[in-house]
Length: 241
Image 1 (cartoon, rainbow, N blue to C red):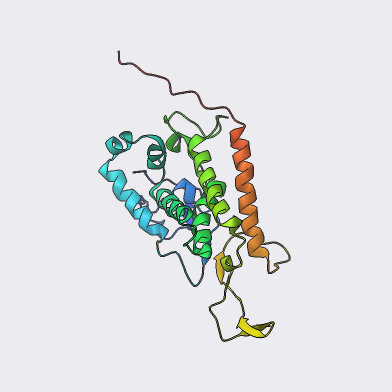
Image 2 (cartoon, rainbow, N blue to C red):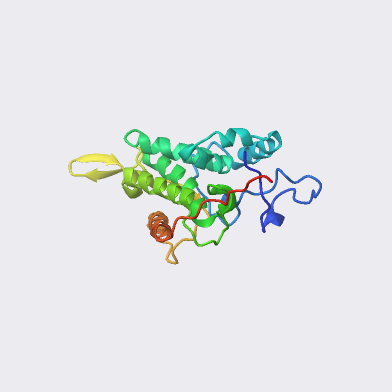
C-alpha cells in the first residue's frame, strides 16, 4: 500500500551490502532510525516492525491504487500512511475506546508507538497528505498529521496522562510486602523498560515519567503550531488536451 523508502542511516542496517535487491531493507520515514524506541522488557510488543516491512514490500508490488482511491475521509487519510502506522493507530484507538478495561501500561506502550514516530520521524507530506501536491516545508497545515496528534492527545487524556502508578510499577510480586497500617500489602515493583529515549542527567527514579511527560508536552506544542497554519490550497486541476 505504501512503498518503503531509503534512509540516510541505511548503512547501519543488517544485510545492506546487497545492492541488487534491498527493497525489504529500506526504512519507512515515520519509523526511521532517528525515532527513539520504548518497550516493556517483560511484555514486549508481540508485533515486530519487520513484519510490516515485508508486507509493505509485497503490497508495493501488488498495486492497490484503486482500493486507496475508493476511500474517503479518515479512512482515506489512514490509507495513505505506512502499514505499520495504520496498525499502531488502530491499536491506540481501540485502547482509547476501551480505556476502562485496557491495562494502562500496555496502553502507554501502544500510545508511544504512534507518538514517537509523529514527533521524531519524517513526515512525507506529499505521500501522507491529501492531494499528493504537498511538500515537506510548504508552510501549510498538515491535516492528516494533526488528526493523528489529536488522536494521541485524546488517548492520553482517557488514561489520565499516563500518571497512573501501574504504568511504571506492578504489584503482582507478593514476596515482598510493606506495612500499611495494620495490614501488609505487596510492595510495588518497578517495570523493566527498554528505551533509547534520552534520560535526564540525574537519572532519577522519575526519569521514565519525565520522558512520558515530555512526549505529551511536545504533542501539545506541535498541535498548537499546526493549528496556527493556514489550510493548504486544493491540488491544481489538470485537463486532458
